Structures are given as C-alpha cells and as structure tokens.
Amino acid sequence: MALSDAAVIAAIGAVVALASTLSPIIQSVISSRQRRKEKAEDYARQDAVAAQAAQAARLLLESNERVSRQAAEIAEAAQGKMEQIHTLVNSKLTEEMERGLIALEAQVVLLERVMQLNIAAGKETQEADHITLANLKRTVADLRHSLMERAVVTDGATKQLEESPGAGWKRDLSMPRKWDKP
Image (cartoon, rainbow, N blue to C red; front, side, top):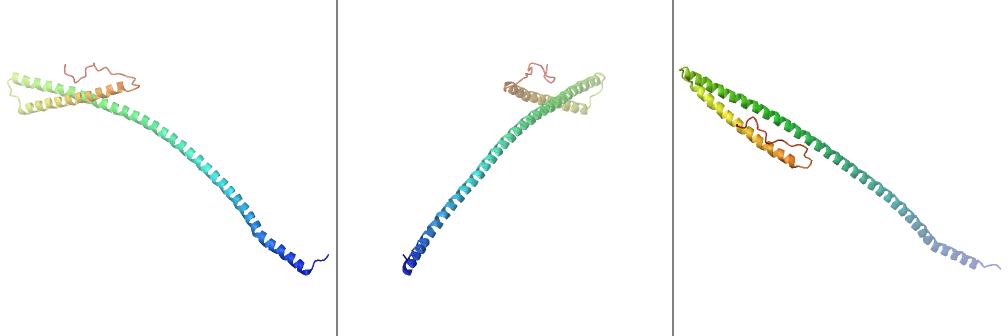
C-alpha cells in the first residue's frame, strides 16, 4: 500500500504542525525546570550566606560581650587603684597639714613667750609682733577648721565604705586627732 503523495505531504504537515505545537511546550517545560533548579540553587546559596551572617553576628556579639566584660573589669580595677591613690594622697596631705598646724602652734607659743619676756624685761612689744601673732593665730584657726572639715568628709566616706557590701575594714572613730582641741 502506497500512500499517495498528498497523504505523505499531509502526514509530514501533521508531524511538522505537531512538532511546531509541541516544541514551545517542551521548551517551556525544560526552561521551567531549569529556573526551578536555579532558584533552588539560589535559595541554597542565600541560606548558606544567611547562616554565615548569623554565625558572624553571633561571634561578634560574643566578642563584644567579652570585650565589655574585660573593659568593666579593667575600669573596676582602675577605679579601685584611683581610690587607693586618692586615699593615700589625702592622708599624706592631711599629715602634712597636721605637721604644719603643730609647727604654727609652736610658733604662736614662742612668739607669745618672747613678747612676755620683752614686757618682763621692760621693753615694749613691737607692732609687727602683734600683727604676726594675730596672723599666726588666724592661720592656726583656719588650718584647724580645714582639718576638721577633712575629718568630717573622711568620716562620712569611712562610714559609707563600712556600710557598703564587702567592707572588710573599720576605722576607730573614737581616736582623737592631732588637731582636736583637748
């Protein structure tokens, strides 16, 4: 059975028509699969980048917390050292002020005795001696007042330290100071 030319041409036309119709559909299916595969790969890449970013953020937070703790420890140690230095400087300054007070009081006593001896010897006291004596007594009073103010501040700080948690020392506040009048 031989097919006529028209039938062969019609069959070829049908195959061409079918191929023309199916070709875009097949190409669309292949393209769709490729896009889905590319999207899946893209999503996998994005997930990997997001995981790396999350890991980096976690490491950065840990690092920041560690640095923050270290900075706080250093600041606390520095503050403690500063307080020790401040206390030492203040105590040394107070000691020097006390020595100065003792020396000034001795000068007042000596000048008063010299003036008394001059009077007993029949000499007149000099106006400069009276002015110097008044200045010395004023300086003694001012220095005594400064030392008392320092004592009040020191006592307040001492009480505050004693009341703070972990206070490991106490100062005997009943001990008289050199500048307290008997």
